Structures are given as structure tokens and as C-alpha cells.
Amino acid sequence: MPSFLRLKPMIAMLTLLSLMFISASRALAHADYVSSEPPANGTVTSAPERVIIVFSQELKPEGNTIRVTDARGNQVDRGDTTLDRNDPNRKTLIVSLSPGLSDGVYTVNWKNASTDGHSETGRFRFTINTGTTPAATPLPATSGEEMPGLALLAVGSGALLIGWALRRRVWQR
Image (cartoon, rainbow, N blue to C red; front, side, top):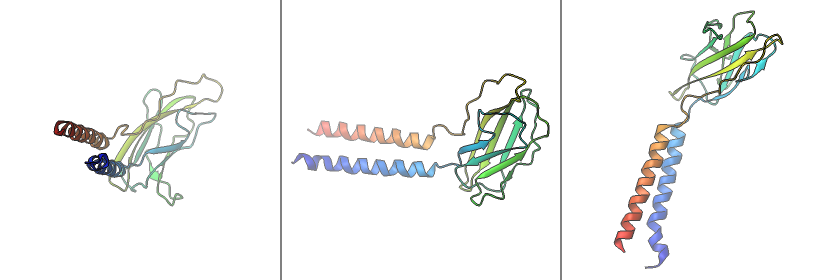
């Protein structure tokens, strides 16, 4: 039998696994953190009036929260998280902050609800430094799922299937 014909089932299997992985990746799409104002791990020279976060997908009007706390854990936002009415893509959340925030490190914890039914959480810090206090150590911005379980399952299943096929082919010789 020509060697090309022996590879035909393997090529078909690899094509199928690739399609499975692509489908799993699309199914796992979430509304991930894209940017914010104040920026994640950034320093501003005056107290902001609000926190704005932009995500990668459209959000539902309900089920979204942004909570901002100071270094002592005191809530400094007004609890009025809303979708930005000026964003036609519905990807932007806004929360108002209490007036007159002092220099220091503030932590932003967020939770979103995307229209695809998934929810993501994350956090980041920003610093207010009007020049009277030293800047603090930043916290890496995070997004809910750093390693989606379904994609990992698809890759692991694919590796097992390829191993099984190769082992079967070796035994048939």
C-alpha cells in the first residue's frame, strides 16, 4: 500500500481534531477585560470621578458590578454600576466614585454578564498620586478564566486519540 494512503486516516483525524478545537475555542468566548480608565496598574495625578471598563463582548444590562475599595477595604464607589449608554456596542461599564479620594492604592473588582450567558470576574489596581506620596506596588489585571477547561479537555482528548491511533498503527505492522 502506498505510504500516502496509510496517512489518509491520520490526516482526516487531525483535521477533525482541529475543527473540534476551533469549535471549543469559539464556544468558550467570554467578555474579557480590554481596557479601563483609570488604566489597570496605572497612576493618576488627580482623583477620578468614575471607573470605566471596556470588555471584548456585548454585556447584558443586568448582572454587572464594579466595586472599588481603598487600601483598608472600604468601598469608595457609589454602587451605581451601569452600561455606558453612549457605547452602541454595549461593551462598557461605568461606576461613579465618591468625591475627594485621597492619594493611595485602589482595587477594582468587577463582574460582568455577557449576552452569551457567561460571566467573568477580575480585578486590578490603580494609584492616585498627586505628588505627595510614593507610588505603590501594582496588582496584575486578571480575567476570570485564564485556562478554559473545555479547551484543555479537547486538547487532552485529541492527544489521547492520536496516541491510540499511532499505537494501533504500529501494532498492525
